[in-house]
Amino acid sequence: MSVSEGQARRIAVGSGGKRRDVAVIRREGAAPGLFWLGGFRSDMTGTKAVAIDRLGASLGLAVTRFDYSGHGVSGGRFEDGTISHWLEDARAVFDAETDGPQVLVGSSMGGWISLLLARAELARAGRANSRIKGMVLIAPAPDFTEDLMWARLPETARAEILSTGRHLLGSPYSPEPTPITRGLIEDGRKHLLLSGMIETGCPIHILQGRQDVDVPWSHAERLIERLASDDVILTYVRDGDHRLSRPEDIDLLAQAVTRMVARCGLTTTLLSGR
Image (cartoon, rainbow, N blue to C red; front, side, top):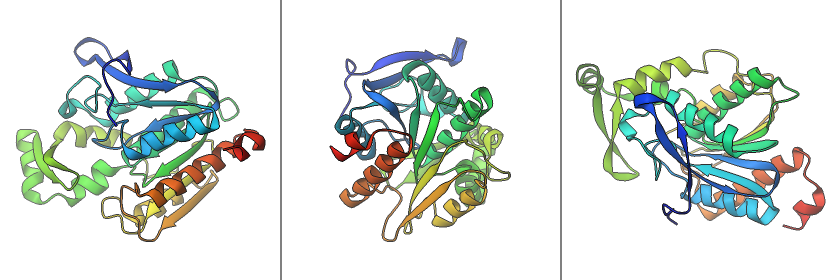
């Protein structure tokens, strides 16, 4: 499934030389809305993103999807992107394109952005007034730039990043290598979460593949240790990989999101009619 220029609305994020347009697709519907946050180098037309949109349609819920700058059909260069930029994109879309309570659904890097977004919303509005009422995270990757990227790079690649500003990293998901920039690594250190306690103010359900080599299951357990004040469910998929995009994985995701929506107060009549 692809997104044409006419399907997505665009909002301006940033100013001056950092201004970029972010593409958004919004489905109107009831609350709580579903707010999709994709992964590193993914876009809003991926299997899981489309499944969340279809689930929202079947439940009559609002759904908001977007592409981070430098991703999909949004403006900007991928190489210019950082966690700060992509968090700013997410906050801008959340504020401008969603209404009322929301359930965040974040995949991989989108899990990190979800946690940062929830923390910011909690600090701004307080626990009682935060619009983020729940999260479903798929292989969440907080701190991945440091712990899962920089720490795994060979010394030659690290030296190249420090001397030239980037390294081209081969990817199993694309024929094109992924540029890893010094800016991405250094900016990521401003947003590290796993060195302290994390408070989101909402319940969280984590789906994690035991065969995930990109974000290993031990990373999910480290995250849970830092979420001591929140209600967290961890579901392991014994034979699941990082993507968790097989039909059975999508069914599990839909079940987790549906339960989270029900927990946020949607009537059981609507859910039973799905």
